[in-house]
Image 1 (spheres, rainbow, N blue to C red):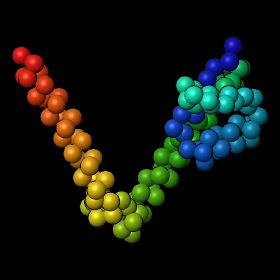
Image 2: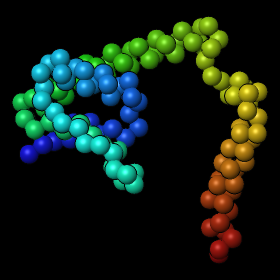
Image 3: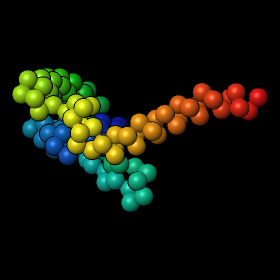
Length: 120
């Protein structure tokens, strides 16, 4: 019976392509299910053979470690070069969006904290 190897929900296209690539390079047989038209399922990569699944999981752990290291290096470089997104930068670029989000957060917090006392 096939096991879900990678749920493609919220997986960037480049990461999904990398995973497909290393599965092909290491001759691991898999099949892909497409996302459903109604958004119930995002699709996934499935592996039938248990031995290949174990190999794929080990390869995935190595890949994720490399991707994590690369992402942290890119973030550190962006911070050093002043390209990293900051709260103040976002506030300057999109003030209405930031103020709207802060108002929504305050509303949710206010209702969450005050509603139990108002219902007593």
